[in-house]
Amino acid sequence: QVQLAETGGGLVQAGGSLRLSCVPSERIASIYYMAWFRHAPGKERKFVASISWSAGRPFYGNSVEGRFTISRDIAKNTMNLQMDNLEAEDTAVYYCAASTRFGVFTTLDLYEYWGQGTQVTVSS
Image (cartoon, rainbow, N blue to C red; front, side):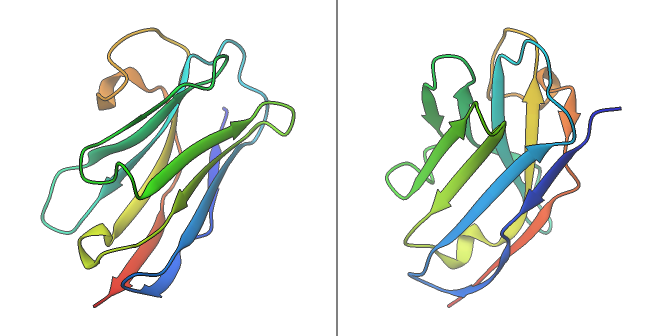
């Protein structure tokens, strides 16, 4: 069973930066997309950003565009999320996800593989 491991969460003040990374326990054949979702207390898990694995094309949710940057390193089999100018509203558990299927990459159901999540807390 392939597992995804997130690292890089923590506590930061508003306006600060954090960098999250996601590494699968083994190479996942035929990845179409990798993505980040987040789950804040009392809210549903929401799409943050995704990247097409082969082309490296990014896509962002409205609330993070211009502040977050998603990237991937195929050789290192790693995906990253650089988060700048963080806001208190960004506080959530962040989950890494991977999909071998083609579809609407902003939806939870597309993704077969998930990490355990990493906490990001932004103090105001």
